[in-house]
Length: 89
Image (cartoon, rainbow, N blue to C red):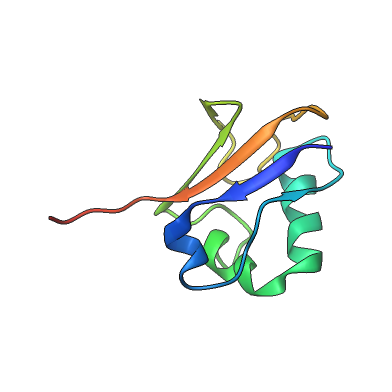
């Protein structure tokens, strides 16, 4: 099963430890995470279910392409890394 990991800055706002979940796409994997932890959903997705503008997701170190549908495929051994863009000094 793919493993979904959230950056520490997100973990400061909501408890979201890494989870191995079933899924063949980013959307499926994230929906399984949200089923277990609904609070993190609003930090990651907007009201339309698309990735929020300030969020980024990498699969095995490669930036996803489908920010709206989250249809990028994942494999059983994939690492999905969810991070929030930070700015400022």
